[in-house]
Length: 528
Image 1 (cartoon, rainbow, N blue to C red):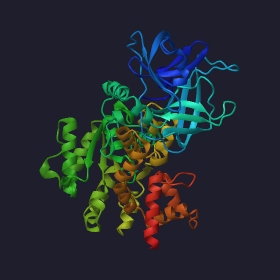
Image 2: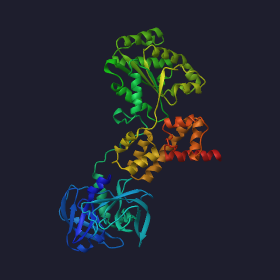
Image 3: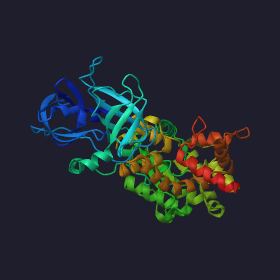
Image 4: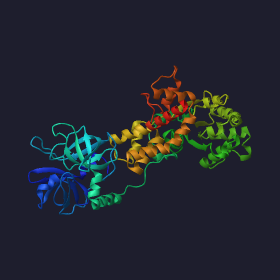
């Protein structure tokens, strides 16, 4: 259904003689409330005020179940064809879930006949003569709130109906009849409620994780984009090493640069952007990369800068690149997945001369490189006991967690904003784009926090294994120490690096509670 505003639009004020209570649209022209709210009406009409539509109606009581069930179903005498309906959820909330109600309370001391809100925490289940009730705490239920729909802010669905107070003069909470009981007692209405929401166009799951996202669905990275712009769009272009662990959005950002190059370079700089994915077998040799560059330039300009048979002729290649410079072009080469040519020492040695050659070309202003890798280039070479040919010509931009506004915008494309939902996503995804998308996808698909978290855990575990494999021993040790509340020996370079990658929060907590459980399992295996 949505958020607090959506719930308010579904509620109605019910008046019978001098008494007042609340009801809500549960299906087209059908209203659900508590029996004690309308019991005195008997066969007389109930006055209905729909605040969202500023309309008055009358309704008749069609079914009434007295205490302890305390439920009543009303049908409007006149059709109201454009009102919304709550979406019932017969699954039990989790302990301490945030709950919200809206109703029309009125007694001898207060009169909120135009509407009032209250919020609660879910305390647990309760029973009254085999009737399942939900026990609420940290909120006040006063006269007139009876019959209010109980919204679970995490799911955006109604999980019950307010039944009674624990103390009207204090915020001790109250009790609600569960939606499970509602569905059991009114199966035909439950079916109408389900059909109503099935008819509402919800579209496809808007969340995507795994594949790079296109620019129109790219979120955030303002700092990183500005850093890259100030390098490749400078008066004298400079090279950038884009660093990020697996699934942190490197490819998506490279794609953004390629397709939105006007945000990085001025039109008069005439940027030519060639993208090469080094996982492609065609680029597993220096000759393959040169040919890929030659073909990429041809696609952009309509002309080959040199002949294919001249790929190994360094003079011919440089002449071709210099001609582009003379014509005012700025050649920007995006190299993705650098580890594809740097996974083994013998393969990287094959590219040693290529690296030195392209460093020379970059220094001469013939080309500018943006290389995406999991680790800074100098570390990639040091790990394989090689010297980096790219020393001193690259700046390093590390991709970490998204800005809070950015990752929340991702969630908002599928859900109406509410604080409880955002807290849940933050807790399991920590602002890392891949895991934010996964959290959104799981919640969209299953509509229940507990089930969604379990599925998130299942889907994320193989990715956590890959991530763990990519970490250094010192970084793994840093995680173990943080979970045990200890401190690493100084200097703690691993902790700083993990924070930059977004894997460790500034308060010392791991980015995801699910990942924290994963690391705990790793710790137990080491101690066994």
